[in-house]
Image 1 (cartoon, helix red, strand yellow):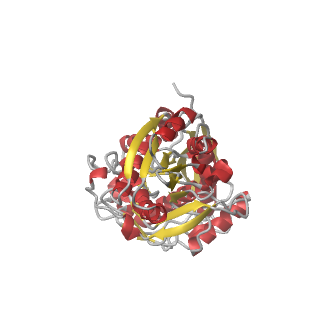
Image 2 (cartoon, one colour):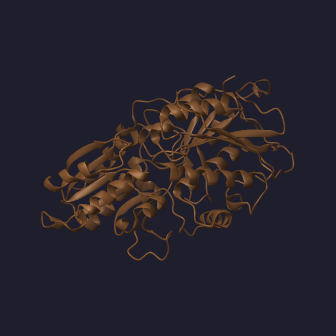
Image 3 (tube, one colour):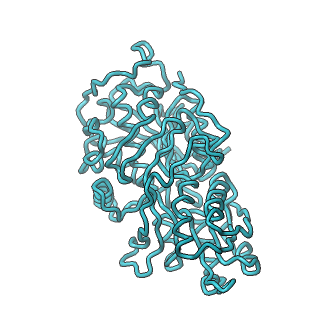
Length: 448
């Protein structure tokens, strides 16, 4: 049995207890208003923040938790309000959610699906959490999303990039703001072809779980469509820390590109091993050998240091963006913590605000009212430009960033530079796209 690590956190700053006064969705009657899991009865409402506090994605989890704490502070009227000031919706006013002060509990997913489900279950059943959010692994996200569907609470996914989260494993109670593997491929492949040519031979090392599988499928399909050949795809354990035995065969494969479908500490270690083997100095097939990291983060770049220089990848968001929402969030986060936020922090902060906003607009904490408020919702001012929460699969659609490691960083945080903002239209796909087929949202479950 996985050890639970669930901690309750109170919130000091309070706001005025005033309701939003908004109408319920048409299908909800007054009688059904309270018939749902963990309906708040007092002056507070509890959210569950389930993040990797240990394991290979712990750095991401720590930044997610910082962002959640900042979001709660802003919702309760503390700080400078952050992106509440730039959000296109204006129903959140610093008085909590529906006039109730926001409190929260935390859990450690350990980057393990069973542990994540156990901590989420405890937060729902013992702590009365009405919404669960967080995670930095798609395996965890899919497991917890399924649990939340069964329990009758909303799941606002944290950092999850697998196509399956809003594909074959999508659920009516689950929502994802973060982009996915298909979007990374659609944004990154044209840039790679432009920089490295159309005649390339790629060798993939892939984390052996749902995210790695769908990321590799997406990148291979997108690059092959532009002329690349996939030489090999080798699966690696999520628990691996030394990738030397996986790097060595690349040297004799005839490949001239190594694609690292790794994230967090895995990517830091595999990239470090690849550089130690001298891959970046090799010339193969008459071409300079290249390394690609399809899913990047500032935290990974910091861990890998100088090894990331010149290496291309994609991100959901970056702190250097100059839109008003990004600048407001970076200012708030930097003032509170002393350094800029990661993309993990950004997506988790935004998901918390989007949940609170949906409750406020619906006039109810009922998860089915919240789901209806989120489905088909278009918004702006949260750092990614105009964004749509698509009703058919609960996936957000927005611009995607292609980045590369900076050759001459000016600080320990200035490690990635944006080389292209890929427009939303280029990364959109039909709800029945083959990479996302096989699942059904089903019906919203309000629980009790």
